[in-house]
Image (tube, rainbow, N blue to C red; front, side, top):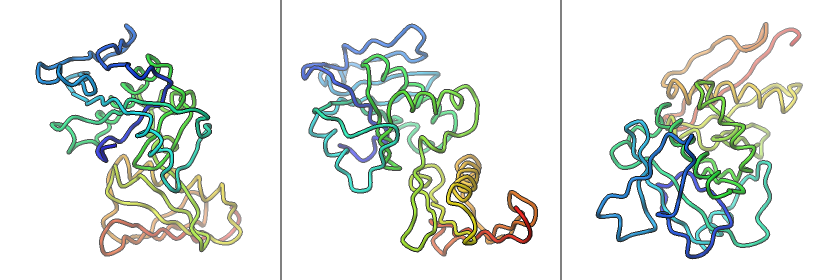
Length: 247
């Protein structure tokens, strides 16, 4: 499947299903629009919502299987499907692809995915930038508040994992900010406490852009400090938590 298609919706669809048959609910803000050049290709259509155009691409069961077999894929409230599934991939169209990290575009993409998923009775989605396979119901719950203007849905679009040396790192944040986070903490910090801090920092970077300069700031509790150091490339930001006194 093309690498520029970040979101893949999985469903049990007939092999002969064509995107021209896709019917969204009346509540959907998008209109499926077929340009003359696209009518000859029933596996790719456009969806227009609020002046933004997104590409919808029909994906075969083989393409879906390839995405499910990616090493390191995390399953979030989902399991690998027990039978072959096909799918529909969604991406910002070329004229807005350079601004794919913009909150308005990201919200529109996720909202479109929600409505397409409901239309085809989706079982799960794959968010490819973070290698996340997410149950569809959980995905919808995770993005609903964001679509309505709430905070960035870190757990639906950014993966968190532990490194061999005990640090925690993100995957997929680079889709939004061109940068990933690697965070370390004192030994007495519980993993979930570190993860909570990582989520909040990832939200900040995804919303406001990458960290450009080395700095030290106050942490999230009294006596806690965060040392923030981007590497030379700017693609990784190392964050070290230090703490003094009770947490």
